[in-house]
Amino acid sequence: MTRTLLLVLILACAAPALGGCDVSMTRQPRYDTYAPAKLWPDGASARPLPAHTVAQGDLARLAETGTPPDASPALLARGRERFEVYCAPCHGLAGDGDGVIPAHGFPHPPSFHEARLRSTPAQHIFDVISHGYGVMYSYASRVDPKDRWAIIAYVRALQLARHATVAQAPEATEKLP
Image 1 (cartoon, helix red, strand yellow):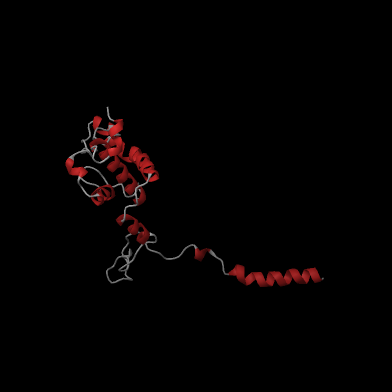
Image 2: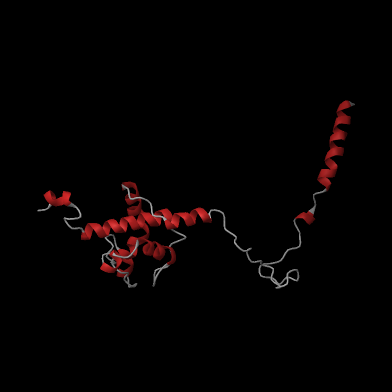
């Protein structure tokens, strides 16, 4: 008898909790995307973001965009890897603008070895990668800010390797023919 009483007691306690669940929880009134809404003065169901809204992680990402990291062998290795993945198809492995994409009829990008691009600030190259320029589209969604800085460090290494003088690398004098 005690078992039966316990079972009845459990069912009596569970019944109100289970009775609250019904189909109306899955069929609630809602607006379809861009449907007109009488609830708001402007009549739109899609609401604009409140002023000064910042997506989670945006402040940290913004902090990464403004400060290039210190150059290191690891940064250059990462930059070379990312450059070969994202940049070399158009810009070529040496940065001359002779990649495989322009070889198939697309516009040639400028060579990184032009005087204009050797003297341009690193932030400009970062902005071009981030927002695009000319026929180059934005890579912001594909390349993280840390990797953009690594690519820029590698591009600077390519430029330096091509245009270095003995005065910039005096330790190379004994290696020259």
